[in-house]
Image (cartoon, rainbow, N blue to C red):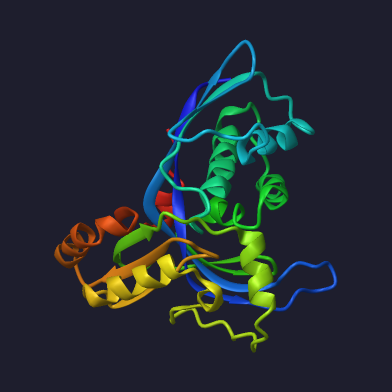
Length: 269
């Protein structure tokens, strides 16, 4: 097996409507995913034994990358590998870092393992790892339904200049869903052209303050991504975004980024 590397992009949800829990206890979604230029970096090389080296964050023993590798090995004989993961996407942010890392590994193995991996198999593994992971096999911009795993790719739009703020506090997905269930609401119909997020009903003060601050700094739109706690602002141009990023740096970890295309999302080497 050869060596390879990839970038694992973050995502924002420009639209996210959450339905009531179904018979399985899970919540169906109507969402629009958009990949953005905040990246973890993943490198895979052949080794004598499996090693996962994480830079920038301590990974738990059970994590999305090792889970994806174990699931692939149930059907495909992947030899021992050294996985080096540079973490830049913060946890508990709603930016999908863990899911993107797992999808990045699947994309790499598809290219590096003799015979590759079938796309439907990669999708099944991604679904087993996390609801956001299938999106990162598609990249760019896509509608997600079901639990987020049923995807309809959308055409790439011209790049939008963004400022993403991750407040010091994180957001537990489980806690956020429980809080949302305590506030009955209509299930909003999907609108791929509008900005909306149900989780803003239960977002923490840090996230809501960051949204208000982004708007005061000239954002055309500002809202929560995923279940939080990160928020994003859309700006008219790079100058406005750069100025806002400099002004808001005291409210958490700030990323100056942009939306990216499908091709950029799926880059490997």
